[in-house]
Image (cartoon, rainbow, N blue to C red; front, top):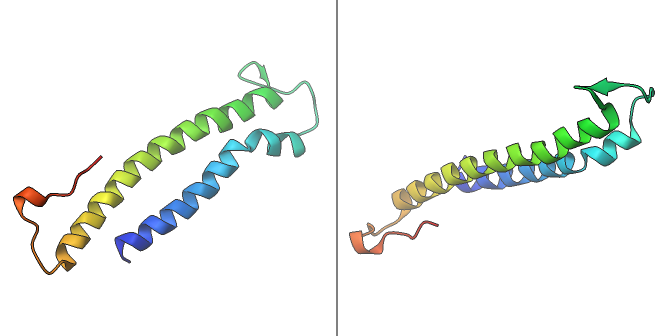
Length: 97
């Protein structure tokens, strides 16, 4: 599988995960368990689960996306260097952000 295909799959999967994680609060309210007295870590369950899965879930996914994005960019640069007809000289290195 080429690096570009990996990046496309990674983007699609991460987009779905971001949407699910960011909207967990709404999903949890729709499908919330009965029992208004249920607690988790001392907080009412209908407050704490959306916070943990929403805010912290998006934070974790953002960190994963950063690491995987950098890895895929390096893999794309290696793949481009192997398929390129002319070697890249020292003065023409690609700019990395």
